[in-house]
Amino acid sequence: MRDNAEKDAHKNPHLIEDRIVHAALSGRIAPGERLGEKELSEIFGVSRTLVREAMMRLQARGIVEVSARRGWFVIEPSVEEARHTIDARRALEVGMLVTIDRASPAMIRALRAHVRAEQKAIASGDRAERSYLLGHFHVCLAETLGNPVLASLLQDLTTRTVLIAALYQSSHDAHESCGEHVEIIDALEQGNMTEAARLMDVHLRHVEKALNYRNVSNRLDHLKAALQGTTD
Amino acid sequence: MRDNAEKDAHKNPHLIEDRIVHAALSGRIAPGERLGEKELSEIFGVSRTLVREAMMRLQARGIVEVSARRGWFVIEPSVEEARHTIDARRALEVGMLVTIDRASPAMIRALRAHVRAEQKAIASGDRAERSYLLGHFHVCLAETLGNPVLASLLQDLTTRTVLIAALYQSSHDAHESCGEHVEIIDALEQGNMTEAARLMDVHLRHVEKALNYRNVSNRLDHLKAALQGTTD
DNA sequence: ATAAAAAATGTTGCATACAAGATGGAAAGC
DNA sequence: GCTTTCCATCTTGTATGCAACATTTTTTAT
Image 1 (cartoon, chains in turn blue, yellow, red, orange):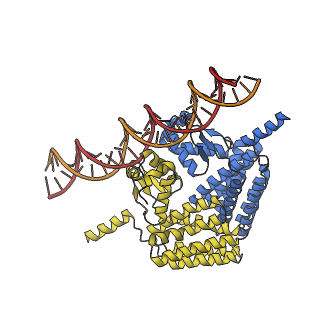
Image 2 (spheres, each protein chain N blue to C red; image 1 turned 60 degrees about the vertical axis):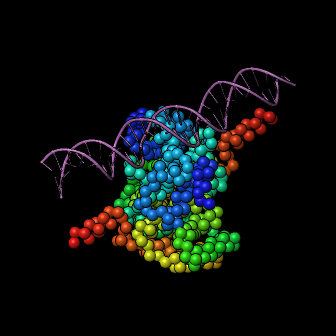
Image 3 (tube, rainbow over the protein chains, first blue to last red; image 1 turned 90 degrees about the vertical axis):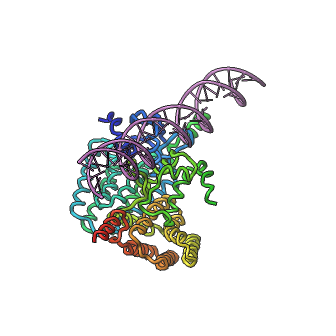
């Protein structure tokens, strides 16, 4: 079910990117992880060229970066970059809700269905699915608002946020996050966009607050800590 | 001064993209324009590979698209896509101003300097520079707010908006646009972010209103009109 | 003269080859 | 034993070659 990647990689040029983004959203790819061109080309059964082209697109989307002649790596945002990313996300999502008139019943239904899926994933203990759905809620919101441009921007920002959360060992509780999603939908259903925007603002501030900007699981810091330990 | 592109294209891998985006913002590249790989590779003195990689990044940024085995083309957004793009932009820029506390004097200075440059370009009749600066004001705003992530997103959205304006023969007056920029800065200086956000909202609604969604200078419509004319 | 077919041309799609540099480990020197 | 140097290896950077398809032009048949 997953091994047929080789077949599709030729037909769908965006498959490689999609898979990587999905894996990142699911927490199956960690920040700092190396994505070798050869390695990927073997996985997807294509030449390095196609892999490279996918990486170029992912680079433009701020998901990966390249270190000259060393390899491609999933981004490891600094504290500052992390702040900027979440700030941008907050701006976008708050603005999105503020500038929209109202939400149709169909939208509300779709969002509630999404939250049900979130709850199911949380209950079943499927961490990957849980991570994916909690992040994808925001993309889903933009999609149901009917704006693919917003949805695309949010997918990238959300992916980066999930990576940031992984890097800074977010302590954000899934239940709490999901609950906040419900609150936002409630406000939307009541047609109170201002309140929905406020709740979204709060929600994203929680996301940032849950980050532990000290315990960076960076390779460098890891090393430092390890060295300090051994020289004692 | 411009012909030394060949030299730099190797050193700065993003030169090709930057040039294309700049040209688009300046109105020197029209929507629907074909960007041949060979053509560009000769202009920049590199092989098709590097051109292609740049195009992949531009594709991810929504500036160009590829038509299979026909070539790369500057985007020609449909009416719907145009709306979504401007809506996304409005969401982002309004949200940006709403979620920011205040603007420092240094920021105000930088923005005022930018507006002076706009006025100079308008007065001197330099249409390319005028187009560039009027669009870049928004990027500048995000930059002075100190958020490169926002700035990057806005650069892409603004570029797309400029292309949309070209495609739909925007009648937006440069003076008016510049005047609205001044108003926004004034509100920022007074620390009235809500008002600044409102003005930005209005400004971007003007941008959209100035579009003529009927007179699409599309090749297809051109052809249709031409054929109607000849068969008369 | 017109329309259909066929060849010629041009352009991207993808793979591969080789160059250039980074990395890690072995060997050599102290 | 420790450091330094050098070499083998691995990885990306860039160019190029050829195949596949789209378009245009020419030819041919009616």
